[in-house]
Length: 208
Image: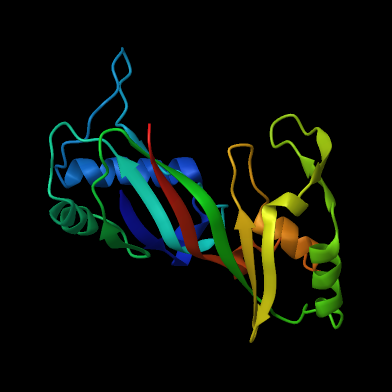
């Protein structure tokens, strides 16, 4: 498991493009990544908590399988030498063969511009005291709209100086997008991701 930071223009690349970037960097670093079988093999790598496009992050993680045991610190160093500006390796950890990871919560910070509402505290209080907070989410492919109660995914919302911090729960059924929470607080959810950064993720480690 490799932890990394992503910022700058790279925050605008998609989840699939981020994986493609890592595939090429791992090949250049000559790290013995294990591949799937079949006629179209792919390296066994994954990003367990995909980052919304436009969001910078100080808490990204990549999980990969290797053909043979490798030194985690050396792999991090070799891979770091092959990465573009804006992407920096932070830490490495070797997982046991039967160990699985699951994100529990993710913490984000939104930088205010001139759109901080005067009634921000009241908006936060209404959300946190509500049993249900409904939003409409549009399917990216079909365009169909559905109502979703996002309250179970919101752990905490709090102002911190010139920023807003959101701690959001992640489950096997999904999570809430930080831009959706920002939309409830007066921002345009379609044009706010570039002001959001992920600052921490809490993981659970279990045996399969």
